[in-house]
Length: 454
Image 1 (tube, rainbow, N blue to C red):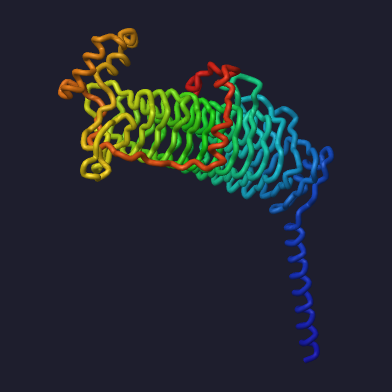
Image 2 (cartoon, rainbow, N blue to C red; image 1 turned 180 degrees about the horizontal axis):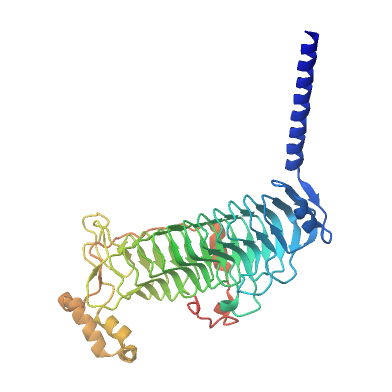
């Protein structure tokens, strides 16, 4: 009996020892390992790190480039800097469950072919988190290239300014990366704020873009969302091309140069609750060969053209929008009549002088934003020399007196008497007032064509 007790006691002691060793191993793996800011220390720490290790970088400069091929967390608490050697990408993440947080990253190469970047999330990587970093002066800021379920959150990306805008890299570049979420980032300088190409199921929300070519640039990106972003002082706000099933909601385009929102071969999408204003836009919205889109409850204000609608765009629903103080509310050349109201609800037009005698919020007369002379002037620009002539004034008076002679074009049968109001936070309004892009002053990139080499 005593022998049995002795064996039981020995087994219990062995179990306790094994459990203690296991917990010690887990605790050791979870405890951060501090990496000194000295030459070669970061590469050595990464080579020795086990799966799940956290490397806490000491304040100061750490040498790159580095490659992460397993679940490692690298954190710098906003005080550590990783500098590349001017070749390739500074940090390459090619494993799963990697975290890159609180670092300043600089010193990428200058080659577009391999997409030299501050942080490069490579094909095959999954569940990578890039958070609260400063990515400064790299060719491309952050690239997500063929990875899955990457989150890019709360980073400041400052691109290069040492070459023509069209030749620079993008702040954040997404290629074939399903499940990517890009949120709460501040992107300035470089080429495009976010360039997404051949991707799907992405969410871009609550980012701020300044002094860029495009704020958000979609090419062949489907089933995705662009929500709550702010574009200020860029050449073009939101360029959505060759894509479908996109939700573009609650975004701001303030003092952008050419277009606020552009749909170019973009189909079956929702454009809702966006504000475009600033007085510098050539066109608040450009719709080119785009079909079956729902464009409603937006506010287009202070542009040369509220909406330029062309190239056979059909089966779009345009309702509940406000067109305020645009030189031309709509530019549409065609003989076909296009109805811009849906379910008894049209749009608000600041130049439509009409009554609402029954108080239902709908004007008592329909509205046509364009007349015959508009069509002539747009198709024959030389005719603008006759704009102030008595003959032109007679034609316009005749059309007002006899609407039956008006040509085809946009017709709003249920125009609204009150515009949609889209609030702008105080700090965003302050940013809008203070913006002074170089092209506005006639400086560098003043003549750049935003749509060249898109």
